[in-house]
Length: 215
Image 1 (spheres, helix red, strand yellow):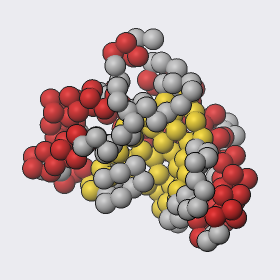
Image 2 (cartoon, rainbow, N blue to C red):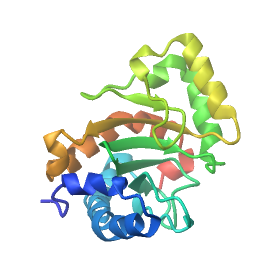
Image 3 (cartoon, helix red, strand yellow):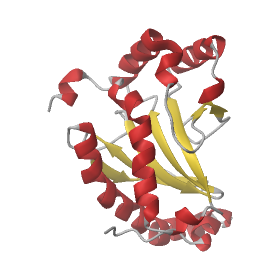
Image 4 (tube, rainbow, N blue to C red):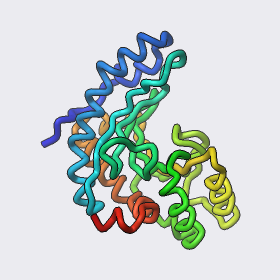
């Protein structure tokens, strides 16, 4: 059914490799092909879900020269050439877990204002999202300072809006699956990631220009 068959514990341990070139080589040869499989498995399903073409983009980390990545991912955006300028979803892996996130990066100059308008108009209702796993808001797109959305107060909502308004900040919400969770080692992770994206999709639909949704 799926190309992807699961991550191994050795895949997670790649992020313990201290030397830059050794870790980058392991990411490229062992993890990146698996993320590409997730991309191929999920993109058609997300295109159907979101009613416009969705393209997978596997992170290359091409600009890194010194510090190896602490996480890596495949992104899903409406643009065939890239994802950083657009609201998108990510499925990725780091030392301790697999993550599924909705992200608007600081480079998202077109979608970020739409997202902010959505957050301001909906208030805490923008976070009326439900998933079997805890959904977190993060201070950046690498999972810093996770905050459960179920605990967002009116005051916290204003803090999130102010944080997102800063030019150098983006917006990230998502879920994690610990490396000890059996599902990360199975093809069923693709289905679980899809279901999480379904639950996060109201944020995406609230961030995308209407003309993109009508394609």
